[in-house]
Image (cartoon, rainbow, N blue to C red; front, side):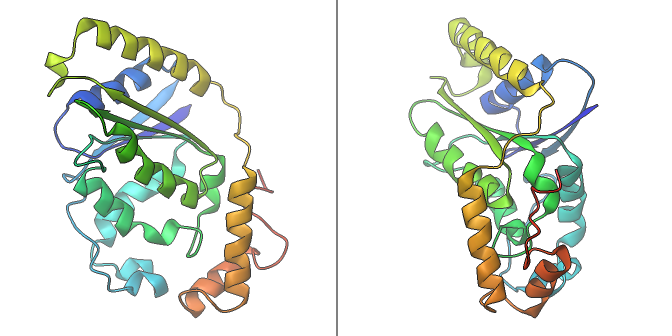
Length: 234
């Protein structure tokens, strides 16, 4: 069964949410879908206290964050939706990115991320959807996700009800094509860029240029300071 996680960068079910739901509904076969809404399910900003560097359970928001991330780690497909707010993702989704910064390559990347697929979706009344997508897609690159599809569209409306039937038909066609691709249960190939970034971070950890001894020990325990790599076991 394909496990899908949908993380919505807004509480309301607007145009961006509906595009994401069309995609998920179009995916064929057995699937289990878990949805999170921000800020409803994680309504905090990172304090910059750095306690998570040594022990992630010491984050003051660990329980709420862990409830989301344990589902993310177990998923096959990640779907992120965010409206365009001032040429950027929503503040609640940016806060989520900040609170999960230890998943990035320079810190404690997770082995499970290297065989996932992800989709980042944004809508805007006019321009700006691409700018909102960029921040989220960059995060997924640094998480190690090898397959990231970006979909941005100007809906020329302030809400889903105002989107024209012609525009909705185009969105449905686009999501149908994407769903067919995502329904194929192939493991995506890790890119040369990802390998390069990861290897640079391995050298950084070897040279004691990480955030502390706890991080270096994490890399050592994974075998990544040697020849082991997270994508080699897939």
